[in-house]
Image (cartoon, rainbow, N blue to C red):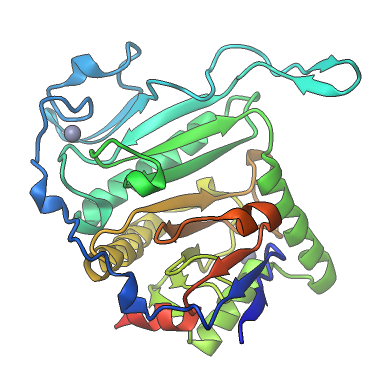
Length: 333
Ligand SMILES: [Zn+2]
Ligand SMILES: [Zn+2]
């Protein structure tokens, strides 16, 4: 029989379909999709060193360097931005029904490394730390613009996850509103906090570490686990043990530690599932909730091994055709 499981933080139910569940190894990409078939440099790639003339006009927004002529991470504007920096956040009301506002915000691309055919799971830990330092710098810098409420930092890896650009990169979008999706999570977290007097994410870490059934990896400052109510096969949460509401509160020793656990989890996915497509998202409270007790920032890694269908779209209930405990033990081995 299948099971309905509820995520304590979001209150969302998922169906763990035991009849349809595949064994973890069945999700391994059969046609090997490894990056060594790609060249380390591509003449047509706008993100490769030497091809700066292919970048949008505004050029490089932020850069981290190893030496005078060697960069490690670059931030550039998105060529086709979803939101742009000019304009104000005033709402216009149409016929007492519709709300309209200018597309104000910021959409940037983080070029994660100069090498064209690499990925976070294959980079040395020091290089991964450079990417996380960049995320924090951009988060803190954008938080100073009073028009922006939050920033979503995310990565689309592979065509099935929404990117066609091979060069390793992630993106961020600062929004002038708190997205409804995030507001919902905060609302649920506040509800739990009011009931129990503690953070639902801190409680989850405690329980996961006690049960040990779904832990993928653990370091001094972070825990990685497959959630009890994972919506997707191999979905993994990476969460700091120290409570902090916003991502911008991460400190240097946590960055160093996060680079270890993030590359470790992504390397495991790369090796065991043959470079699957995936998204990751840094979930954070909005800028103004910095220091709050009820929300706890974390990273969600979502491998894209299955397709969403009508039931998911119509109900918001995902059918997970894998068993979270089996996925965790497969990743752990
Ligand atoms: Zn490239
Ligand atoms: Zn917490």
